[in-house]
Length: 435
Image (cartoon, rainbow, N blue to C red; front, side, top):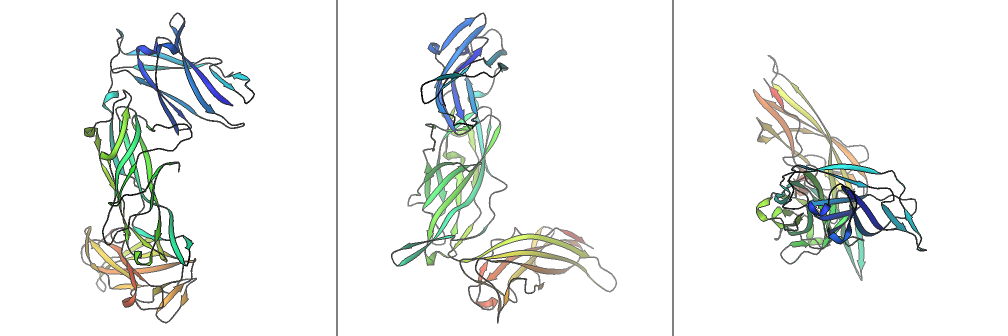
């Protein structure tokens, strides 16, 4: 069915209070339209009908959510303030037609709601941009697909999320039109991806772009089947967005870093009065944690930490101990973890880093194969190392931390292995006070 007309009823002339409307279908499609006198008819005492012309479809046996947002005028000529405006959908308020041209009308019960028009800050909307707490931590990103080009095999990273960020909107609703000046770090140790995507929190791709030679990305067009002019940012809400990438890796890209920053200054948004959001109403920046790219290698995941302690006695010193259960997944090839010194640990003292921990131990985990110098994790498998660390301390508060993990693509000792230290400062045990 194609919905072509919606009628709203008001207890006063809507053009007296509202300047335009926003129409959203299933949270994705937004159109902005002026409220014009030609679409308003007085149908009774204190009764006005506003006709909204639409053109969205509803497939058989499906449901679509329609939202209509009304923008208040900057100035309302009304003696009574606050004004209570009743808005409702009357019987037969929705009209649709089928592919044969037959018209149908809604038979849902009439419903109304009251809207209070008051002096507000609708024209003073503000945004705050910040990194979401669930944005990915620093990690290895291993290529997850291959593409052959003549005699060359290209390792590709597909749909890797680098950054999750929030835009908090206050004092008024906005329409997000563009997100510009998204910047990837450039330099010898950094990578700029081939393609970059902006997604919302439902996984819908809002826009895609190709970075320029300086690592800059501008998202200037949002995808929609319904002529989307922007993405709604409701008043007093927080919307979450994702920056994801596709890229092809060369062998000399191994170990290089993706880092991306989103600045609120790059947000282009429209207020309900049709004006653009001013720069002094924008604040905040979000920077991704470093993601290290490899054509093949390990993905390390901290599964759990168990912390314990012993207090000093006449015959023993105080100690803090922790077991870090660390999962190692081998992607695109075998991975080797040296039998000794692979897990480098440090301790924290009174919340400050205080040196290396000498007492670290781990054994061959289930699923790993013991070699000459290292434990082998076969390609596309995952094993868990239980890494035990103990520190002897005097009176203070201590914690234990994973500072570095050594690994290789062949059976070698720790001295000849690669190193990943992105978990430094992130994988930390509970703190314990030692007496």
